Amino acid sequence: MKRERLAGYVRCRLPRTNSMRSLLPYPVSRFGSRHFIISPRHLSIRMPGLARFRSTMSAQQWRVGSVRDDGSVVELDHADRCGDQDGEILEEVLDRSDDTRLTLKVLRLHRPKVLNALSEPMCRRLLLRWQQYRTFDSGVGLAVITGTGPRAFCAGGDVKRVWKEGPLSAESFFRAEYTLDYALGLPEEMRRTGGTPIAPLICTVMDGITMGGGAGLSMHATFRIATDHTVFAMPECAIGLHPDVGASYFLPRLEGAMGTYLALTGAQMTGLDCFRARIATHYVCRAHLPALFDDLAGTVATSHMSRLAHDVDACIQRHEPDGLRQTDGVESVAHRHDMDRIFGAPSVADIIQTLQAEAPSSEFASKSLEQLRQGSPASLTLSLLSLKRGRQFQSLADSFIQDFRLSMALTHDRESDFYEGVRAKLVDKDNQPKWREPPLIPSFDPHPHYADLQLA
Image: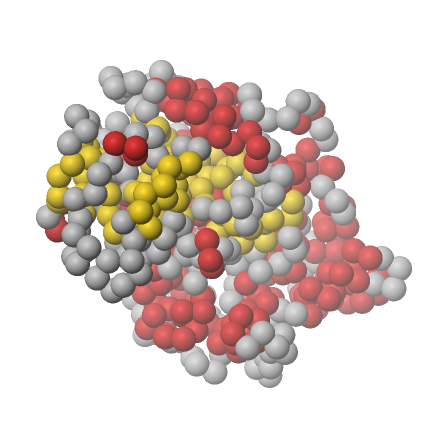
């Protein structure tokens, strides 16, 4: 094994064989130890104190080692391996003192080659982490979810795998994804409705591409940080799906018809526009994120659960650009009034009719019309109906239950627009989907072949 130390990073290179692959440093706060597991891929991450690490792993065996506070290294048996064996979720503990009551945990999505797309195992592991953090003695006050690499926070769910494996895979994946997203949204829903506070609070850092399933991880969190590299979109209609992941609750509550515009067109928004539109609660430049994380660790360590939300909010605002909150907010979003005027229409047909009339003289109308024409006709109609229903929902759970029913209806049939859309956009990439004619609009009732989503 070759170890290389550079600027706070440690790079471990091991033979690329089936029996011994690259080493992933994976820290987990447990009994004063830091655990390390084997990962199928080579990587380098920042880890304080890693210089003391000496591997106890045989070159012929799949082993797990742990470095304890006194510097000794022990080998862990299978029962003690509390990490992610695929290396898709990295966990880091940011402590400012040994006796702090509250700690900050950072969870990093680690699939940079596929823009940190969510797989079903990732969803289950993230949910497991959150459940562990919710235990009475965990001491976790704030959990920050971010992505690995400069390109993306999370580009969405791994729908290519669903396309390949079919309806049974779709059911399992969407159950896992929606259960996770709902759980991450619970602390904010309880805070918003005056219910019993739930710890930890969730903060998502939408640095880079944040689309579909990535938006689902973000949009229900208490703190949603956009950056100067954020690219936010809900492009599901273009693959024959619908804006899911609780979007039917979140999008209708944006100002005017902005949520409808985003849902039907799949249009992309910058980080600054996300902040202005209140998709994001904060805006911090990427260059300032390391300092923000350090400051957050200190803030959480000296706070108390009763005032933690206020303290974290103030901490993040200290790292925002000067004068950010003196702007006109949502009114300064480009084409804001055009969105309301056109996408506030009662039907997709009415929206298209207005866009067609204005397209020759309006770049906004022309581009929006082109984006709508890329979507599945069934998905467009269904999405508009979904948002109208979602505006009346009393809870986040209502949205996820509806989303699951619709997703099952759209993925149950191999001949559906979903499989054709994924083929055209993501598999063959010919961008020539042959949508079903006439469009088949599924029911909002429970699907006869799948039990409803159960949310605790």
